[in-house]
Image 1: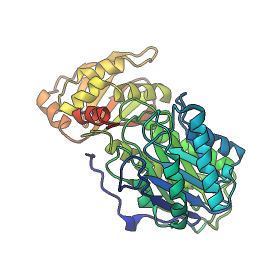
Image 2: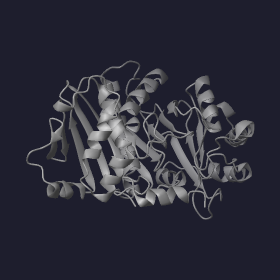
Image 3: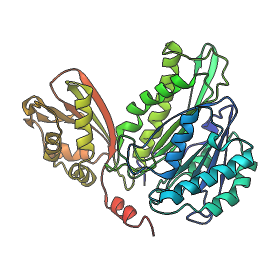
Image 4: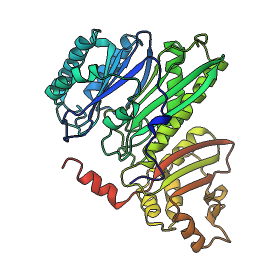
Length: 408
């Protein structure tokens, strides 16, 4: 089940010069489904990344971060499903390194030019033999137009592959951006539980690309939540192949801002697709907190409401038990919060004015708004000019079912 999310049309996906992809059916968890992906980069590409803040970090993340610290010029990513290779100790690290070594030999590059990624069951060893057996096939089948296949190969509980493409112009040079993401459960800001890979042909140095990915992350992937859970494997990578003809971006100039807008649009589409495909989700909920004293306070309020099980179950039931929103808001760690200043809207319906039920509010109108599958919850704090927006889902019976059966 997903909320107004359609399968991508391959004809609308833009290929990125300098990036090729391939997939394999390796039987890592299920038979006859794509479960392994390779992304190969031309020499000269630069890579930037942000990773999970969970302290139980997975083996592939340890190695990916280490290899990225050696230098930004990378040549390949390999991504497997079925096993997160987390909670696997020394063997997990050895297994991930072995995969990198075998792939490096096949591609004739150094193993530190490879970043490994895994997703799946935590505390399950990597099926290294199956992965190694598939590497020759992956290398032989690299192609620029395999973005959709790669998006399918990295899915776990996702129901729809997630691909987005955008384009723009810098100095008369056409700039292309294409990205894929996976994620459906264990989604929470800082980082959300997901994998995402975005490629662009833009010409930018490594320092500016790393600055850019931080800005993009804070406004997109760090603004989504399904269930308040983070994971051990979260990773978001941007690749710039430097194939475009414009002058290289080496500072935060107008070209940097153009590229940032393009990447922001792409990451926003991919991150919201994760929410629309949230495990068991029946509703897509936007939470807008405005008139805050500062953005940090607005973020805290949006997050505490997005992660409230009582609020989320009320949305699932289309039950206008809207006092749950007030109670959740009151749990936010905001110094000097004054409930008498707060107004709250459900779409355009004002239901709480100055911290209490609005005089003209009716439960019938509340029910009508709650029954919609796209809902905007807008909170006016009456404290200042800051604002923040976050996206979340309801919490359904199917969420419990999916997660109770995840390993079976």
